[in-house]
Image (cartoon, rainbow, N blue to C red; front, side):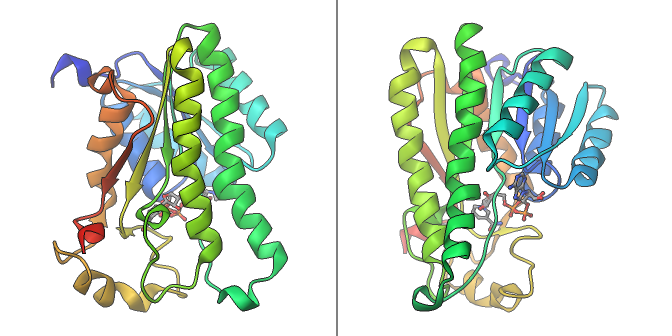
Length: 254
Ligand SMILES: NC(=O)c1ccc[n+]([C@@H]2O[C@H](COP(=O)([O-])OP(=O)(O)OC[C@H]3O[C@@H](n4cnc5c(N)ncnc54)[C@H](O)[C@@H]3O)[C@@H](O)[C@H]2O)c1
């Protein structure tokens, strides 16, 4: 591996690390040498990921909490500092998905979506950056989505898409504010990716249609997001901040 891609000795804070993209990137970062705090609203799932990482010979802790609760997030970052050090790098990945025609969308569903998928990213980035600034810098990767740029054909999810567009622009705003403190902030925008989120009954039947709408004719595999996430977290992307890296098998070209 080129040295600039190494995460040797870095401490990572990953939200939504219990399964799906978060768990896969946690393994990928650990394979590149990072110690990881695995944060998830599902504490048992976070512990499962942490166990897998410890088998890779890195330090890993599991922390149960809700990204939409700034107190829970602040305590989790403090615990990471006490038990692992850092954090030097972070992945703000926790998210939820839900479908409803906009005219029927319940205010509670709109609010929860924005709370988790947008406010949660801000609360996490803020808590992480406060520590990174004190330590001379760091790299934050926010999980956005191609849905922050396009409206998914056939999916009624105005609240999800709006939150993701917010994550892309929030990333640019934070990148500009924190550049002078050595904290880089970038986003990663996958296309349709095979995870429990896309296997949920609400959308499970849509796979063939998604694939037919994609130039590469297939969904993204979660493992294919490891490379882009390592690039953004590591020194290999030292000149990149405020960027949105799309990994969508060409979906947004059409
Ligand atoms: N799967 C896709 O096709 C796809 C595409 C683009 C973007 N994304 C985004 O990638 C991220 C991960 O998606 P995934 O497919 O792995 O989803 P997933 O549902 O498989 O996993 C999400 C994880 O986040 C955790 N989580 C949910 N709410 C939380 C909260 N309030 N606090 C802490 N943890 C919480 C869940 O417990 C779960 O472990 C999400 O932000 C999603 O919007 C997914």
